[in-house]
Image 1 (cartoon, rainbow, N blue to C red):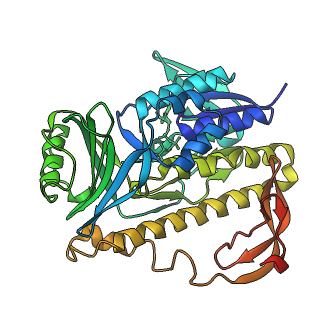
Image 2 (cartoon, helix red, strand yellow; image 1 turned 45 degrees about the vertical axis):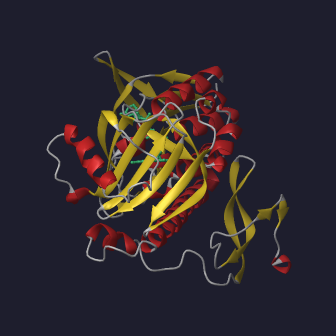
Length: 405
Ligand SMILES: Cc1cc2nc3c(=O)[nH]c(=O)nc-3n(C[C@H](O)[C@H](O)[C@H](O)COP(=O)(O)OP(=O)(O)OC[C@H]3O[C@@H](n4cnc5c(N)ncnc54)[C@H](O)[C@@H]3O)c2cc1C
């Protein structure tokens, strides 16, 4: 009988890891509920391709064709590239179809609690009934809802960026071309996305402590006021009516210090959630979800390399998190107005002042480092450079040597 793995949550990270584990011969059960909030998100072509390679074809049928994307930032307006829009409730439901179609067992239940990590028992609740599930390994993919506790263990240490909240709602607007736009305003930034149906999703991201919000029903007026502060005519929106679905989501950047422990791993946002300004949250969640199957496979089938696999996973997430955080910081710095606004001040200096990339990349030497090879994490000789401190093992399928650099 193959080993059994429980995957908690049913977002994109859960789906990609579940399919990867199934491919490696594990029996996988997904225990998750669909996210309750009706939000629109944007993905790049790179993410679209990664989801396609992972086999999420039904989910991708719900995604829009590329739409024009613009940025109104630091007082100037420019056309950026394109992005595809997805309405998460529809996309997420189709992700479940993809999993079921590919033979993964999916149970739509709420994860209630864990027993101690070494027993690997998860309690779920559905229709008032508690049920125990036992597994050889538990994957926590519950997104930001995973919180600070792990399987019966002490609270996890976490790095947190400036405390941030995003408010959103939808509107009916004049049917017009689909578009998306990011717009800086004094206390934060707006993201707008309109699909071809004329439905406009608006999101305002600001300091968590900056809000003076009595109830969720105040959100549309608050967003409308920010929209009015944008130069008239800069955005292709008019006649906003019928505000609906107001919601508030935490959007603080968070990195869990120790995302993999005995019999338990966190993936996706549960391990590392990035600032939504990057528009790259799903991409980041896939970066852990795609490598997690090899990490788990090594821990279970080559226990002598378990620590190597854990080290690989921790270092990789740490590296990606800080690289993304610094890219975000540089983007915040490129908005030079509003010196006195604490929203902008805090984000222009977090996480530090280190450059994203060194001015000139230099080769530091070769050294043995963990790499992903055919479903396992193995130690190989890699080339270390200032820009690639985790090392480069292969380019185009060929091993890299010092002489090639
Ligand atoms: C304001 C904001 C805007 C964003 N915009 C974008 C964007 O435009 N583009 C982009 O790429 N990313 C965006 N993101 C990030 C994106 O939403 C996440 O990075 C991505 O969804 C993470 O995927 P995941 O699978 O790790 O977690 P999630 O997609 O959050 O999935 C977690 C799953 O676990 C389930 N779950 C949670 N708790 C339980 C429980 N107790 N029992 C059972 N099930 C449970 C949830 O219902 C959900 O199905 C945004 C994030 C925020 C906060």
